[in-house]
Length: 198
Image 1: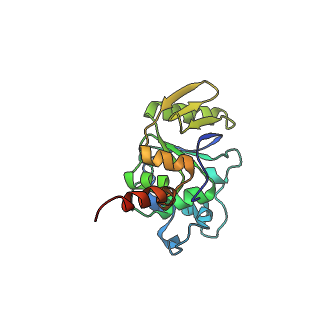
Image 2: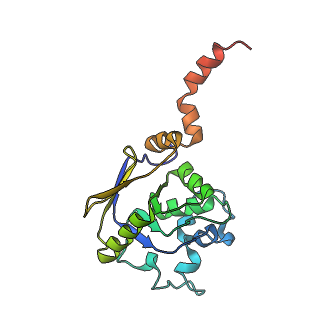
Image 3: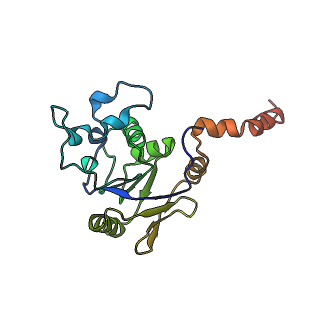
């Protein structure tokens, strides 16, 4: 199994109300040498999290113990810039399983879906409601239901639907990457090949 199955996630959220967060801010280029998906979480938003002497910047949200959870809520146009898949790896390795925004860069969205991070795109109005709720009470919980394709602000019950490709949805619910999916239907492929004339 490539990663954890994703069905319904209930969690508090970490707010990052910054627009146009690009992949170089998510994981700076100097950390792209590794080829495995391990250790990238340590450098998620590295230049925003740490000073040059490696001391934490107290005013950055990931260094604020007030906020925690498996859901990252970002501003509009999250994941723009270069196509590095390491940005999605860093988000996953840090512990986030869902990113919410009002708009995602396509390549970043697909990279997330390939490794088990669910990108949930909502309206600008609903995104602002989430930011306001989390700012008012950091213990605010969100429920993200992949089967129903719905995100709910639990304190108020307000919800919004989100879109996802059917193939990616099935893979995430089963914890499959593309290779796992093919292995899962191996018998069907072999049967088709055996019954198909050359």
